[in-house]
Length: 414
Image (cartoon, rainbow, N blue to C red; front, side):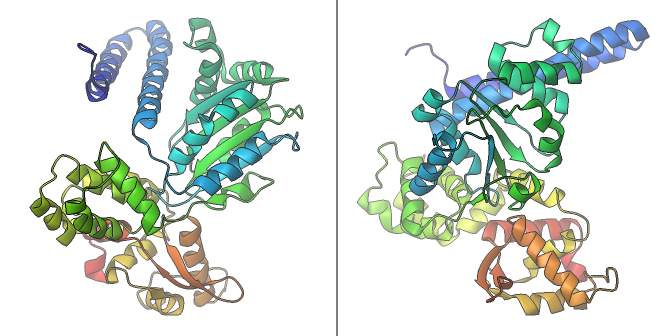
């Protein structure tokens, strides 16, 4: 429609508004310190600005999700999750979690389920909130309540945290509700909030997305986590075509190079999306051949496309695991690392220290399992008793290890 702003225009406008809000907040805080009473009054008002900004960011994501996200190859997962969410046989309250490494499409799958017509029909109330590594319990409560009432009123905002929790509990009481917590990093989030979610045997559900495979155990979920896998080559090609071409079909003249590029993405949707961004505005055969020959160098040349996402996983690692993870940058691309060899190398490099008189090999094995459960490594072979026999790392993660290792002067010392 003529005169209607594009999505990109709206996002740029939104970012400008948010920046202005934050800038205004800083200015007002400085002025308000002159009078402590006035400062406390202003701070309450300005905290509300933060919630509004977060709501704008959620609106931005939700709009983008409807327009741009592609779910290919997850038919079985969608069917299974829909059954667990809407099945009438299980009336008790249940927690369901979707886990996997960065860039696999956890949020995309969760959003697809959340917006499914059957889910909309079966639940009296739905709410979606983004958690991430840094969160405020009060902001999460306000975010969920805003799904009930729309805009956050002054009266609601003046409530204390316990009052907000009590109000949410009363709102949910007797309803069949679905609340999605996207991007959970720590089970303490749920442990702090679970008292506000009543179990009235109405079939209510809470859906988590997380990179921590063990999350479902920590939150006492009745079901094991849905651990997302890398896409098959055919599934990846389906994503690739839909992301690059408006018709969703690759021209014959570009298919050979396109399939080479697709294969180099190794089934990771994040890599496919980045590659698609390099290709969708240039359909020259020579350009596609150039990308096919050196895809990794093109991706690494603009690390902003993936570094932020992968940095979240790295920053969440405890200090003793960080050097063990960065050590994977020392191995060649696509190298399958035998677990025993890796453990010996870690020990030889002084990355593993004795804990409570345990053998270093046992401690190192725990480190390896922990990195695997955090979705940073891919297990390629397992032993008969379920332990990691060999593993490898995705090329994007390996590039991150190299970049971060150089930044921290790690690999040069090992």
